[in-house]
Structures are given as C-alpha cells and as structure tokens.
Amino acid sequence: MSERPALHIGTDGVARCGWSGDDPEYQRYHDEEWGRPLHGDRALFEKLSLEAFQSGLSWITILRRRPTFRSAFADFDIETVAAFDDHDVQRLLADPGIIRNRAKIDATIANARTLVDLVRDDPGALDRIVWGFAPPPRDPADRPRAFGDLPAITSESTAASKHLRKLGFRFVGPTTFYALMQSAGLVDDHLAGCWRAEAA
Image (cartoon, rainbow, N blue to C red):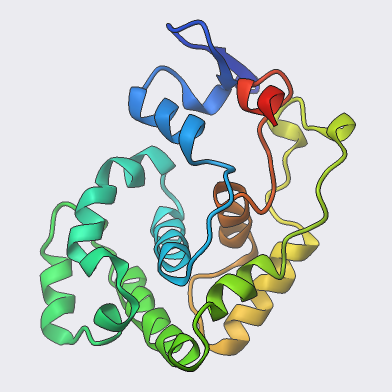
C-alpha cells in the first residue's frame, strides 16, 4: 500500500499536511488548532479525553462530534464530570452524538475524579504535568518530510503515560499521549512544505 501524500494542496491553493484533505472542518482544525500550544487543566482534560475516545477511530470522527461531546460531558468541567454517577453513565451510553464505549466513558469519569483531587489543591497541576514532558524544540532542518518520518510513540510519551497511569489515569497509553503532544503543541509535527511549518 502506498503512503498517503505528505502534502495536500487545497482548493484554496494552500499546502497543508496531507491528512487535512479538502474537508473544511479538518482544514480549520489543521490551521488553527493542531500543533498550537494548548494550556489549562480543563482544556487539556478535554484533549486527553477526546484523544482516548479517538483510539481506534479517525480523528475527524471525533472532531465532528466534539460539540456533542462537550455538551454531554458538561464542557469537560473537571468537578462536574468527577461527580457523574450511574445515571450519567446510562445517559452517555444512550447518546448517539458521542462514541458510546463504556470503557472510555468510565475512564473519562475516573480520570476526572483523579484530576479533581490534583487540581483542587494545586490549580494548573495537569498543565504542568503534561508540559513537563515536552521535548526540546526540533531543529528546523530536522522537520519531518513524510508521514513515515513521524513516530507513533517517543521516550517522552512513554514516560508521560507511565507517570499518568501511576497517578491513576486510564486510557493514557504512549500512543494516545503522543497524539496529545502533537495536537496540543508539545511537538510541531507539521510536515516540511506545509504552510504552518513555513510560518513557524
């Protein structure tokens, strides 16, 4: 099977990473969110949760359902999600607007309960934990040129996964955490020739 093209020239004439395709929502996500530094406990809890739900699926599936996810999970307010009970679980399992995976729903609630204890006494704790695993900036000369140049896991994502699991987090494997690193801007994996890479 041939590798997908590294770059895609959109109908607007802009060169983007090939995964963005021609879907306007995907292009907006690529241009405005993916790879830009994301901070804040709530924002990173949402990102971590959605990356877990994405496991085994395409990101566009999650992106298109993100508004419904936000509604279903109280805008990922940590204390509110931590207080979800069996009634909420059943509500979520019946919601066709999200991914109705019991293990992932349970993990999101459990992660909120773990997190609420961390941030209640130490606001910004998740932000510091996540960003504590950011690698040094890549030399521009070493920017990846093809999808095959991008890792699925790194030593940093493996260490972060181990640390988060030790704290009690679920669905935070090294691959899931590396996806968060990419999307939340801990690493810049825009490919050479992409307009975002050129603008960096």
